[in-house]
Length: 128
Image (cartoon, rainbow, N blue to C red; front, side, top):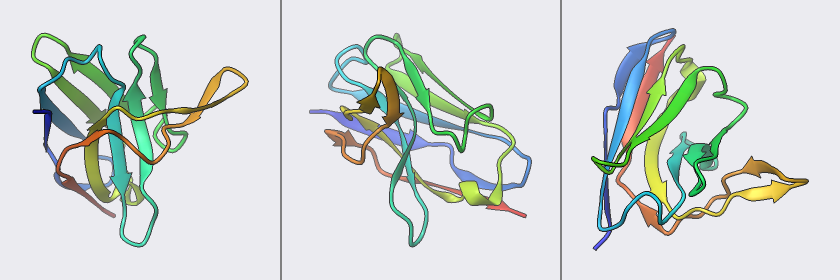
């Protein structure tokens, strides 16, 4: 039974940092792509950052240079370190496994919108 448990959200001022964690059970990280999506009120869900099964990492342009994704395979836990947070980062963040990235000309365009497994969301609110 696959489960993903996200934690670490909260309220932070602009420029601050948060680290999200996602504890997984029922599968190992080398079986699926893993990553983080977010959805802000009134906006479409978007893939923020992910790790493919070959270890390739992906970041949405909006978070490049500010967010860092990592995984501890021994603990089956994934992290998203978020620095330099902006009010536009405010959203519910979801960890997920088994998404299919969209590619073109050998590069990853985005993480798509679907994943096989989803964790519950954790709210991130950035005040200005």
